[in-house]
Image 1 (cartoon, one colour):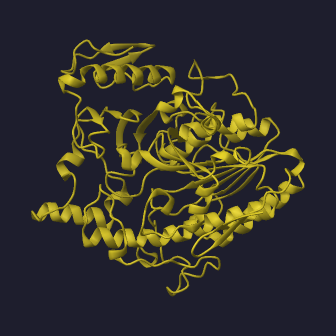
Image 2 (image 1 turned 180 degrees about the vertical axis):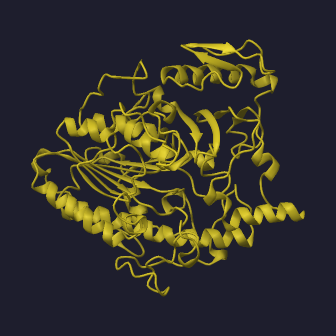
Length: 509
């Protein structure tokens, strides 16, 4: 037995013999979770359980989402396909009919056909159900999202039920847990901006979550990320969010303990990440690093030499499906979408666990179309360790604001200070936030905060051309309908110029 002792909790992982020779998978997916963990260098937060998981994982310093928006990101996790390919262009709200294509072969469908038992507990938020069908579902489709996504005691009990049933099942399993923290609160007011009062045992009428011992932070006790203004409003906003990190962290500890108690700790691959960045300006829905960057860990019981180590290799949420298929040694099926053959362009992260994993870990791609239906701002991104290229296809329009990014104390303070002409200690301005260049090229070595756009700089001409070529090749491989915009029209596989004042005659094939 191996124990990991922290200042407030003892997390035990028992490594008994492999149960019936099975290989299993546990996916822990946070909601709007950023880097506010001790293992990622935050000196103010208390996150003993996530930090303990890091000691038995390979921690990626360069983890990224494929799309910084909830439903689209989850669709990528569960299909391995970017949103412009799988069809989940925006939030899975039935009134707007943002659904993945009916023919998409999702991870749970592929696994089920290959004798793998699948389960989801927590937030699902992808459509249609025929594409994203799990054997066992305990989700926001049948329960209140706070109960199934934030009540860690409720979730723990269903995790236990799933694992106990798996002990009596001959099939291996994949269990996907969608934790709703640290998303902002949809109900507002009485539960707090982050639902930080939900079940805390001290706020009348909000109930008690027995397994949660809330950590309360003062505004002066938080770390303000570089991309946010250091103001009293922001600090209080972050303090409220930190409280929900304690619920998230303690939930992770509970779920891993259930895995151990059920006897599966020594045969289960654990993947830990988030759908997108924290719900603040320049982060969530954006593809600057605060929105694209994600905490990312992989724990393999068969590569213990990688435990507690960090890597500069680049991981993406687009890699989760190929990783799980590789773990189960399942081939991706051959099929077509909209008349085009489908292939996975992500990579198996299992290769990061061995020496010399190859060039696939040197870059990642991202693709965004909508958040909600009124928030159309398609972006395509290629990022390496040192450079990032963003293509803003709808750059003439103001950048749209998701409701939870607009109606929150931090942004409203930014808005009010700007309108009143007050000093705003922010790395950008509202005007720059709303209106962006079509192409944005950043040297992340000399400009890690993405402040200087080098897209038109003569000395970056060759870099710009090379990255555009790399990005476009990926868009062709993934059959991106938007790949000719804004200066061209796609007909078949050819870009025809619109002659609309853009780069005349330079549509991309």
